[in-house]
Length: 210
Length: 164
Image (cartoon, rainbow over all chains, first blue to last red; front, top):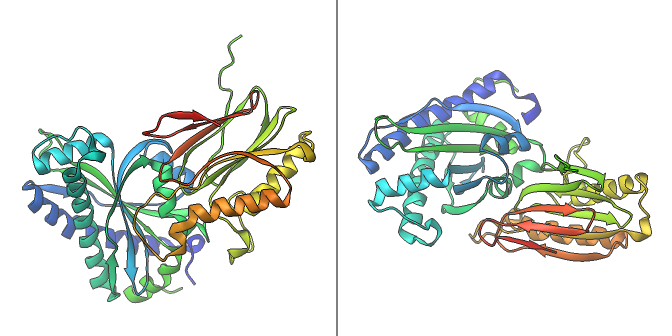
């Protein structure tokens, strides 16, 4: 059984490669079309971090974030996905999507659905790549947009993982607009796989011995 | 005299016990529950509990600070070691929110409620009176306990600050 404590470099590389294909490939293309701009997704960073380190990674446990959360459903629920923006990044993204700036994000239905849709596109592209590679049927739940403290949001997404572990694997893809001269689109895309899904994913991908 | 850095920070799945003039603080409670247990002789402990039940884990080695049952055991044990009287202990709790609005049969998404229930059951087992609570809802909370005054300050993103 593959568990968080005995993951090898090879395991990590496989997870990273999925992030690379799903993120850098499909999702960037989809987002470029939507925004009508060239969007780059950086090669994902993959890290094993404890919960408190994860909070520092997004700016501290009480840092306010705009997050789109989805659970992955299907044969082997492999985890949670988050699209995380700072409130400033969210405003800039909304401005580019719908042309007006949203003063109060939470009360602006159009702004909320625009950001949710981006989260949906990114995670959908990612999941279809993962699905194709593993032949495991995976679907995201309806996206859930939340604006609140980072720890409050992320920890609820990590409940599943926390049953068995004090660490999370984060596959983090940064989104950046290619043209750096203008306002940039930025954001983090996290995939947090549940430990119980590792076995199934690695077996489906082949080439890794337990 | 100015005292700086008097805040003792408690992380996620962590707990600390300390005395006045320090304050105990934990940030970004969502479905997690912050449990303060204190004795009026100025000693207090704070736990940031993530999950309700340690016996649900399959592992032999667990982080006892993560679960409601074991974290409260540890708090009481350490408070008594620091000179608190077991019979004088009181508790205040905050957290146990429901951060995501979608409906689900998944028990794990109702984890906030289950954490609150587990904490209350464990406090009752020790006969520790729960004198104040700010639980459930759908907001993240940052809490700070002032050992000197016995007040628990609760900060949220949109509803400001309150004290219980």
